[in-house]
Image 1 (cartoon, rainbow, N blue to C red):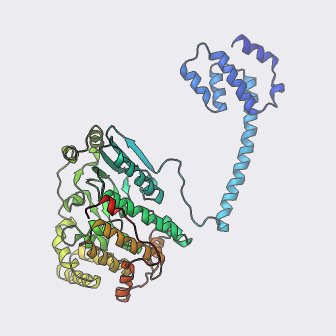
Image 2 (image 1 turned 30 degrees about the vertical axis):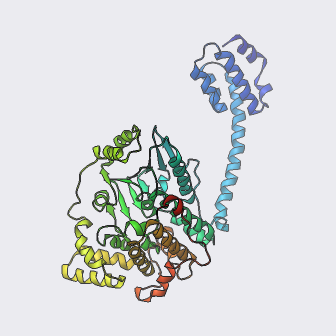
Image 3 (image 1 turned 180 degrees about the horizontal axis):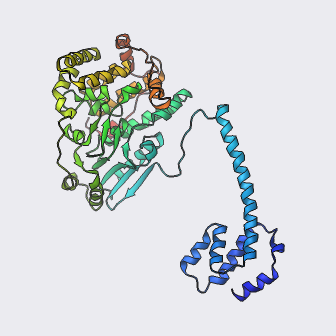
Length: 479
């Protein structure tokens, strides 16, 4: 102990400092520390003093900088502060537990200090990282809005050659945050719902007309609008962890965010099959049907990203070469849906959902194929109205451009959330994702009760709302 510290210990007793405030004790401790370590302390010793007051004291005691009586007074003051804080905390906890009983919070929303979209910058590229791993990176309006602003700025930046997108955790993107959308609708907040679709579809269009090479790393779950924000780009890298699907009809909705464009352009009638059943594809199958451009094992992703991070180019062929160097050549296994393309074309080429189901029933009776039975089960579990709207949307998408498909999907989405004809979307989300009773009460309850006028209404132009405005004149001047 230094002479100055010894003198202080003799003159300042426990009794005289017992009423000192905690902040003053901390300040004195800090001063004594400077006296004891200013000559010989290392940089680490100084840095440790910037923490909380109790950490300062512990550090000083380890260096014999303070006497135990002084530390004991500090601890007494700290315990008093702690008791007051604990009492306040208990009051808050009791109040919080009582609020749901009063109906103050009809649903919970998560708040995170960490950004939901992260950015990784390299010399000549940028990577957008979807960062909601606990929600399988489902998209919120704020996430899509940030993505759109980032992509616009990167497109204008001459120092950026290409752009990547990936997800954190075990998913790429599970689609839109439909649970939040459901709660907004039940609260009557339809304007925020409209904004969600408007923002999402404009970003999908930006992706489809992006001027720079874009790579989406589809590692993990890639569902619904998660496909919409990745498939319009130039490159898609699927892995052995990829799970692709469009399950919207199971929640009373329709495949959107450009789905009617990319599904309708698949081989044969595979798009109709995927849209109406919500069946899954793995990474190998995505490459086989041209939904993805490349395939790699999950274990190689770090090497691929490192290789791409060193590139200084905007030439798509250079990126293509790098992806191919680390890619894997694989083939669908014998149970893959790809090997059933002939049966799919035979059954799903019909004009109506009823005819498709009838064709599957005949096929099931003739072949005793378990796949036919499972396909029929999925169709019968889905919303009858959604099935007919989805088939209409996919068929029209075969002869339309991306912007035309997005315009039609926007109309269907806004008519759907309005509830004018049916509230199947809210019912579907409730039964599968909120209450999870898996017993939906569809309206209409059967295909026979879904009229042509109902389907026509969903695809008809908006009357009381403005249409989706896409910048086709500036981004596609030749169209």
